[in-house]
Image (tube, rainbow, N blue to C red; front, side, top):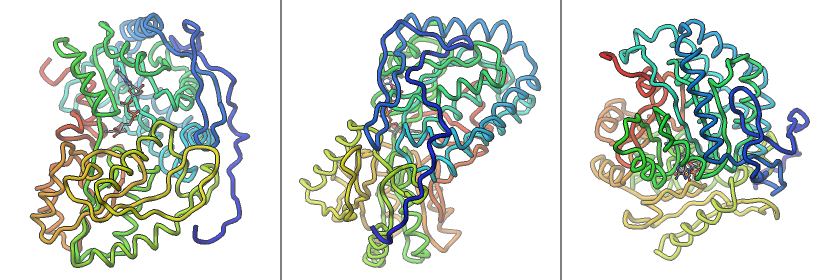
Length: 477
Ligand code: NAD
């Protein structure tokens, strides 16, 4: 694709992947009940390590450790003392940033330039940000009383970043944690466990248990878990909401999305094209808030599409560890099948597929950057989350039509607006039913800014002052 670039691989010598990993419970790595699963490099299908699969009994041990640490140590410690640990963790993340980025790219498939320049810096920023809150909770508006033990389950698309979004606010507020990373990306969470040891975090404050859906189910339904925080698919989110209904567990759910990225005819088109590319091809489109529906004003649609295709043809796909790579591997064979299946449904429903012509590596899981035109709102590729590098293009004539189409979805996580007019940005932002609306930019994340959805995208907010609410009992208790 595009220019020939000489290979510029980041060395993987900096990471030390062990042949097998146990569970991190009460500050130590333990064997668990003995069953295990493999985690692979999705770019090569090479087996990276055997990872313990936590049983119900293992989860129970982890919850007990978290409860002990909560009652004896963490909830009794002053906010200023807790902050010292969080700052220490944040600094170690920065110091070991290269190692974390390389490991994330190897286990997840995302390009090193994203893990190095986006994921890891924002992870550190989250710990710094919430460290700052730990001794200022009385100004939070949500009280200062922690909830207890938090059970947290996260997905594979931003393994370390989702861990940071969950653990940093929980610890800052005085809660302890049992966290499960996704089964295809457990390695950076296990490296984070080592960082907790290095930071001398009291044993049991953070427990990391690996496993698949059954382990997740054991965490969220454990009777001694006070708070459930989940990021993942809407389907599993609904199952969790049912599982905790009737208990007094507090729940936050961050689920799927099908965001509209809306380009008006007065937008700076080259910038908009960069934003469209960033919106849907960043992280192979494995982004809950991805701009997966492009709504482009009819009068500029042809021009935008022409520029977009030209830009897409310059994207470099391949080795995630190469510093020039823009598009890495799809995270798993299962996800690749889902992307293929939905794209084939797009063909069958009459949309027109265009994809970047490129040689796909023979090993690993790959899908070329793709767009569909001739998409109507009834098409499944306009309604369902594909969670891959596939853009559905629709057109509109008036701002009202854009709003109506953008909101015509069961989701409501994010949206983008591209226009020269500030007044139009504000009026669109008011009318779009989305938790985050980006204007003349897309996929920007900052720890000070709350993030979360409407409708089937979930409930609760993560990030910012609002993110504290999920981990505190409330102002009047
Ligand atoms: P998933 O729901 O299958 O899995 C997410 C996590 O839940 C994994 O750790 C999995 O092991 C666990 N899990 C599976 N079944 C469970 C159960 N019954 N009980 C408890 N835990 C269970 O989703 P995925 O395929 O890993 O991730 C992709 C989805 O996540 C997409 O739909 C995406 O939109 C969503 N996502 C949302 C956000 C957000 O912030 N809103 C962020 C990232 C991903």
